[in-house]
Length: 87
Image 1 (cartoon, one colour):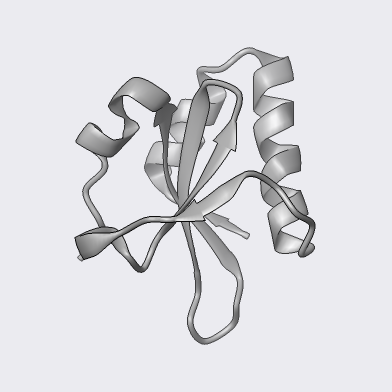
Image 2: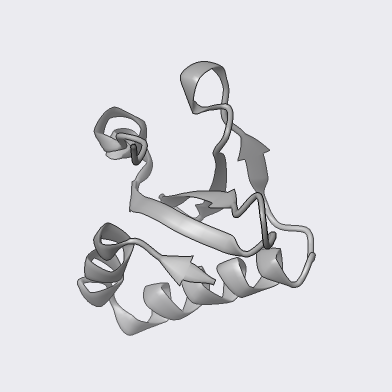
């Protein structure tokens, strides 16, 4: 699993219990376990969102390795407004 700099920074700012829940959810996704995920649409169709309480993680599988890349983490109300896909 890979994390963008934004995700690393956001995780560091969270309460340890919340951080642990998000990490566990991402680990579950990577292991193929079912979690609350949904593919995004339109120009973001290469990405998925993972819902963990009030937080959303925007992620994508690496097309070559299948490894999960967590790109963006924020609260539900602002994650979709703030996320800009990497170039």
